[in-house]
Length: 313
Image 1: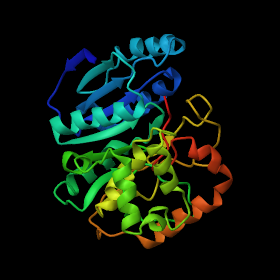
Image 2: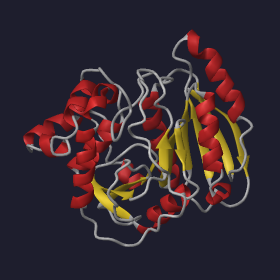
Image 3: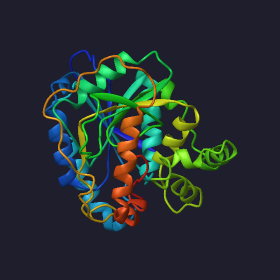
């Protein structure tokens, strides 16, 4: 169950709606909303806030603080607050919320309460959503980029999908397969596990197996696998337009690391037409980054890092 507790309608909306998923970390959320609302496009964007219910009595106070805060949010075309009346957990909340918003509007920009975005995040998202709206080869748009030292193209494609500040269309989200067993079986049958693991540089297959065994509750590993198996591509920026500020031990099953923190874009990322194919150079650079950060792997397996790691609530 859930309840719609707040709705404010203003001017005609021309931007993609934003779905923001929140729980119990008010300081992180305040930074996320401050950065998001500073985007020029925010004033003409619908904002849907999905507030999960407390998992246990210990979280009730923090969840209540978050809910009081979001009821006074302004700076958007409209604000819709959906308060879950029972605890969904992050995966179910995102799957349900993205399905609802993309189903109603045909597209959606997705953020969690620990993602801080650039001033140019929404422009990039909306430009890319418009450019590739009718090309079914493109399943989504992503805003985060790993702190790679080599210069990357302004934008490029990788096979699969991602989870730190992203957007998609209903036609893309319709390809999401919730059953991890179905995905794993097909990866094995088609002998794709090595390639799926970024040429052995990151243990995505193991993460998918752990999701099936209920050792994690990652929606994102299933999103990545769903897109990968359908041979769909995601557009990435060469400069990061989003940062995850949640790697500070405040999230469930989280530890502290700054291995994935870099500079955030301080100028627009232009979205020009490019070939819809995987960029070999970018893939090689990201695989090298994964290998370099192997010491952080135990943390990353338990956390929402890169394409797949999600807080388990």
